[in-house]
Amino acid sequence: MINDFFGFCGLNDFEFWIVVRLYLAAFITVFLGVKHVFFKKKLTPKLKVLFWSFVIAAIGWEIWLTYGIGGGLAVDDRRSIALSCAVPQNLNWLLNSLADVFIVWIGLLLVEKLFKQRTAFLKWEWKVTLVLFLWFVAQNIYVEAFFYHLQLGSNGDLSWALLQPLGTWFNPTLFKINGNPITFQSQSSWVLMTPVVQFLATYFKKINEKNQ
Image (cartoon, rainbow, N blue to C red):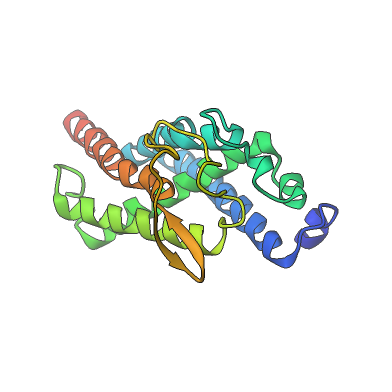
């Protein structure tokens, strides 16, 4: 059924699963968010973190990379016609931002599982920073190496973005996986998101504790 839905775009098998994963991550984020609000009957600190993570991801890099605002190529110029059909440019930033929120959500859950949920994010702890950093960067390397390497573009193709402040002016290849380059610029957004997410989680958690 899903294959039939995207079939008219002419996706190959690899592109098909890229698209399915993107839509699935976006759907899960929206579904869990709505479910969370419905059962909690209020905006919890976690939901506030996720909302602002969506805003920051969208404004911080997804919109810039989608439209090539800062001197790079728009996403439709960096990928196949089939992918542009299945994920229209005007939906690309939205779906990817929702997928980014899903990554943040998993990061928050990891911290809560590894440390006491009640005390997690009540104060700044470097062990929390390390967990978030390792998760954010590891998943991004995996995505760049095995899923988005066909549309990331080469050095000079990607736009400057607020959370990719060095743009393509300084974008060395850090290493390669299966011949696919892992670049500095693509990792920089999640490196910078690590303290941002931790700050938001700590800020909203402390406010919630004071109001109880």
